[in-house]
Amino acid sequence: MAAPELISLQSLEGRLLFAVPKKGRLLSASLNLLEGADIQFKRENRLDIALVKNLPIALVFLPAADIPTFVGEGRVDLGITGLDQVQEHDAGVRELTRARRLSNEWSPDPNAKPQGCETVMELGFGACRLQVQVPAKGEYVESKDLIGKNIGTSFVHLAKEYFARLEAEKEGLTNGDAAAFAGRKLRTKIIELSGSVEAACALGVADGIVDLVESGETMKAAGLKAIDTVVDSSAILIKSKAPSNPAMVELIAARIGGVITAQKYVLCQYNVPRTRLGDATKITPGKRAPTVTSLEEEGWVAVSAMVEKKRIAPVMDQLTQVGATDILVLDIHNTRSS
Ligand SMILES: Nc1ncnc2c1ncn2[C@@H]1O[C@H](COP(=O)(O)OP(=O)(O)OP(=O)(O)O)[C@@H](O)[C@H]1O
Ligand SMILES: O=P(O)(O)OC[C@H]1O[C@H](OP(=O)(O)OP(=O)(O)O)[C@H](O)[C@@H]1O
Image (cartoon, rainbow, N blue to C red; front, side, top):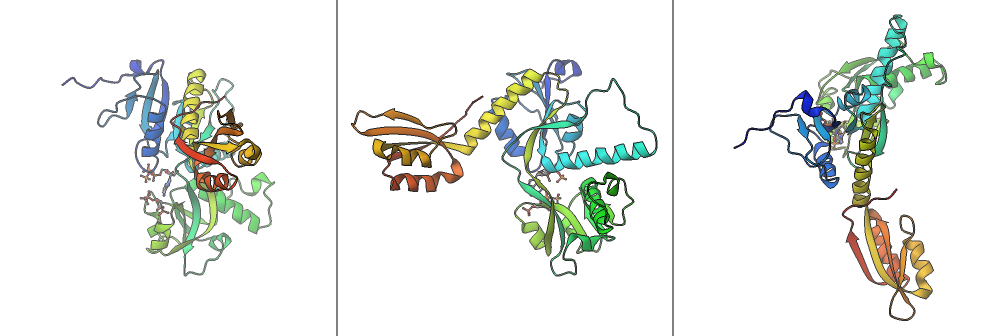
C-alpha cells in the first residue's frame, strides 16, 4: 500500500485554505456541502489538513470555536462555523482591544492587513440559540435578577458583554453611551466551563447559565428554562477580509450557494388550462418567474417553477384547487444563478 502523501508547507503554497469543523454538530452537514460543491479530497487518518484533488484548495479541519480566529487573522481564507462562535470571537477581540487601549499598549499599525472575518452566506443548518437559562423552579424570572450572581458558560465574552449591558441599564446608563457597558468591572461573575454547562446549576457552581439550545431536551432534562436569547445562531460561511485568492473565494461561494439553493427548493411541474394560468402562477411564482410552455392540446399550458421544499404540500393542494393536473415534484441536484 502506498504511504500517505506528506503535507508540507510547500504543498500548501498557492492553495486557498478553507477551514472546516473537525468534529461535532457541524461536521456532517459541512462534509455534505463540500461533496455537493464537488470539492474532492481524501482526509488521511489523524491528519487535519487535506489537499483538494480537483481545485487549488487545502481543507484545514479545526474546532468550530477556533475557526473565526484563523479566518479573522487572515491565516485561513474561508471557513464554516456557527454565528455564535463568530460573535463570541468578536466579543473577545473587543475585550482585548479595550484592555490594550486602557493600558496604552495599543497604537494602530499602518501596514497591518485588515483583520476580522466577513459573513459570505448562511448555510441553512446548525440552527440553535445561545440562551440565558435558570432553574425552572427557582427564584429568577428575568435576566436582570442574575446581576451579581454566578453564571456558567463556554461563551465568556458574549456573557460578559451581555451582563455588562444589563448592569449598565440597571444603573440608568443608555446603549448609546459606549462607555456604559464597555470595559466595566462586572458585578456578575462569569465562570468559564468547557462542556456539560447545563449541570452547573444543579451542582451549585452557578445560579444561571448561558448555553446553546437546539431541541431544548438537554435544558428540560437538567430542570432549566430559558429566560432570554443572546444569539440566534446557524452555520455560516465566513471569509477573511484579505483572502489570498479572491476569485477562488467567489468560485467556492457560488458553488456552495448553488448547493444550498438546490437543497432548499424543488422543481414543480404541472399542466393547467390557459384560463387558470394566472391563478396557478400566483401559487408558483418561481424564484425569478415560472417557465410556461404551450401544450399540443388546445387551451392547455405546462408550467415549471422552483418552490421552497417546505411549502410544497400546500402548494400542490392549491394547484389542484385551481385546476392543475399531472403535478410532478422533482429534486434539484444543483443550481447556479448570478
Ligand atoms: N444542539 C447544539 N448544541 C451545540 N451546538 C450546536 C447545536 N446545534 C448546532 N450547534 C452549532 O455547532 C457548533 C459547534 O458545537 P459542537 O458542540 O458540535 O462543537 P465541538 O467542536 O464538538 O465543541 P465541544 O467539544 O465544545 O462540544 C456550535 O457553536 C453551534 O453553532
Ligand atoms: O437543545 P438540545 O438539542 O438538547 O442541545 C443543546 C445541548 O447540546 C450542546 O451540548 P453538547 O451535546 O454539544 O455537549 P457539551 O455539553 O459537552 O458541549 C449544548 O451545550 C447543550 O447542552
